[in-house]
Length: 56
Image 1 (tube, one colour):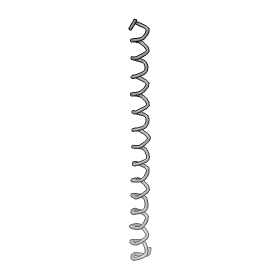
Image 2 (cartoon, rainbow, N blue to C red):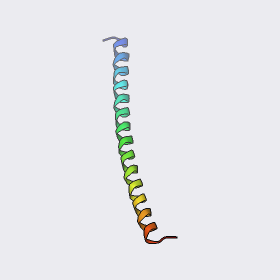
Image 3 (cartoon, rainbow, N blue to C red):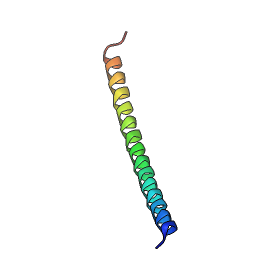
Image 4 (cartoon, rainbow, N blue to C red):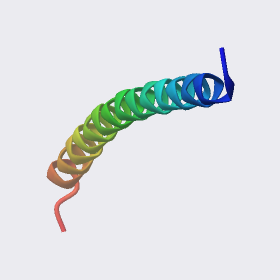
């Protein structure tokens, strides 16, 4: 194994790590989007409920 092989292995594992991190970030974004949608739904339900019980 020469220096070029070592460099290629380092680049390979660096790319592999970057791809794994990108995948984890995408998973996290999806989870956050779902949570924000749930929060938005609950807030609109709360506002609608309170607005109907206390008209201006």
